[in-house]
Length: 258
Image 1 (cartoon, rainbow, N blue to C red):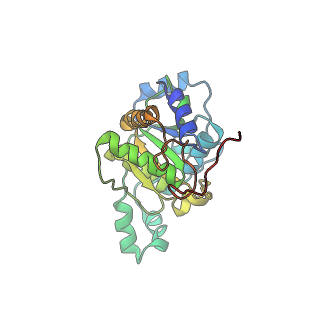
Image 2: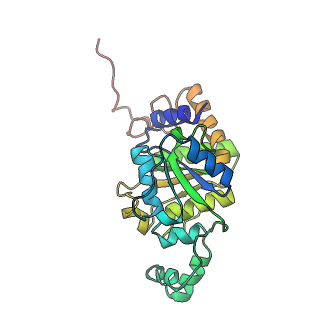
Image 3: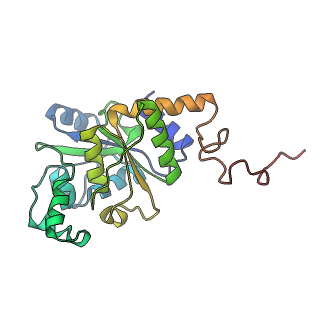
């Protein structure tokens, strides 16, 4: 299947509210040149903004968004992407979360961080990247039960159990994607204090991030379940997420009129 076809299945079967985001970290100039030449339309931030705000264009508006350091106005993301070193400002920015500055510094240093040399980052709807690039990560903004289905399919597809997501202070979208890219592991985490408002996650969305190299296997597992009868785990036979009622409830049942 193409990425466009996979996106169509995911939107239909998981009842996604947002497009899955295909994230690409460009380190290779030839790959970047290919992307910029072949992409039908690229959007760039008019003013510097946060990484989670870049993703709004991809997941809500269906836009292909690209930027380098110049379009990023978030120091947390700059640190995660290897575009700045740790400094007093970064440590003090975490002081409100920690017991003291010493703890804040240790916590910042323990975050996942890309190696230096990153040229730029593309975030695009999964269905828009055919012929442009292979995703480094696929980032879903979804609800609790959608996240559970993705986690279950990941565990089955990769023979991994249990999952151990990585949650860090003030870096859910940026740091969450970096962790998954570097560790090649599934990540599921809440919005951080920055992305809750800046990234527009007031609906209570959960972040699910899957390594790009493992994504097709996860999709194939979903397809297996669909072919066997239903994409729904909670109520097999119903369309996902299934009827939102107590399991096997004998009262909430509908029948066709004669």
